[in-house]
Amino acid sequence: MLEKLAQIEKEALESLAAVEDEAALESWRVANIGRSSPVMNVFSQMGGLSKEERPLVGQRANQVKVAIEAAFAEKAAAIKDAALQKSLTGEKLDVTLPGRAFHHGRLHPATQNLRRVLAILAEMGFQVYTSRDVESDEYNFQLLNIPPHHPAREMQDTFYIDTSATDEAEKQVLRTHTSPGQIRAMRQFSAENPDNPPPIRIALPGMCYRFEQITARSEVQFYQVEGLVVGENITLGDLKGTLSEFARRMFGRQAKTRFRADHFPFTEPSAEMDVECFVCGGSGCPVCKKSGWLEILGCGMVHPTVLQNGGYDPARYSGFAFGMGPERQLMLRHKINDIRYIWGNDIRFLEQF
Ligand code: PHE
Image (cartoon, rainbow, N blue to C red; front, top):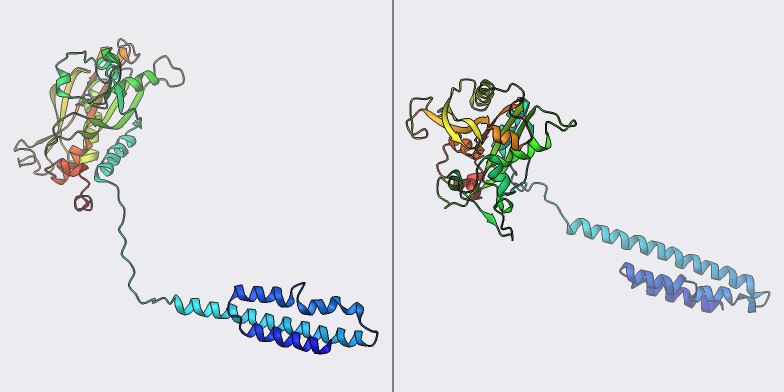
């Protein structure tokens, strides 16, 4: 028995010397100190030994077991240490290498300008209100006092969406301007709704779409920001004061404005607001086409029919509305002479903002 134990110890230690990785170590452990390993078998055979033999064999078996276990612990530590060394030398890091340059993301210039417009209007008490891109013919045109066959429709070549609608009013279009949002806002904040009483003072940003040839001057999509104010005793003076103040905040305190009579079916009277050319200061240049003025937005007093379509009694309420193109302002400010740069996604253009 004692000889057998010496043999067990010798074999275990010899085979351990050949172990090099964790997987091999684990199978070695099962075979040599596991429950049915040779040393453990010696322990279970002790019952069959004589009284004299038993303490001697027991003591020796314990020594062997302790020795094998100690060798195992030593080997396990060595393997772990070797793995650590390998990862330290294998993944060497040169801390003197220059860092990798990374590109800063940024907001699209049209978004930057749009946010600027909205921030100024917000300071002036306008709440942002958004409305849908897909509108019915009724909202985009009819409720805004543009009946079928009205010549103003031709100014706004329209993308129609394929539907089965035969009734003109139910045809679906991509909105050609943000003005249909006027009707949606008035109906939501209606004079009869005690939760949302007037006055209304909203800024309505959104993408608009027109079925047009894409050229340096016209795109099929562009942002507009609509403004709408409805309440009691709102006058043309409020319109002029509000929009002139907007222009000063947008283009500088010295910005001069002028209003020219114009026509929109949904406002009466209607006007265009010009701001003195901020490129040449009014003396005349290619950007303002030598006129000294830049056309900035369309505006007017909300037409009584439109107020009525929005659920407001024109005998009691009045209001003004305006619509502007933030990309156009961006182009004027930065002398961008081709509108196709704006949605062309050319990084060389976008990186300049
Ligand atoms: N909807 C008009 C356009 O697209 C702009 C406008 C808005 C004019 C509100 C007057 C009042 O040109």
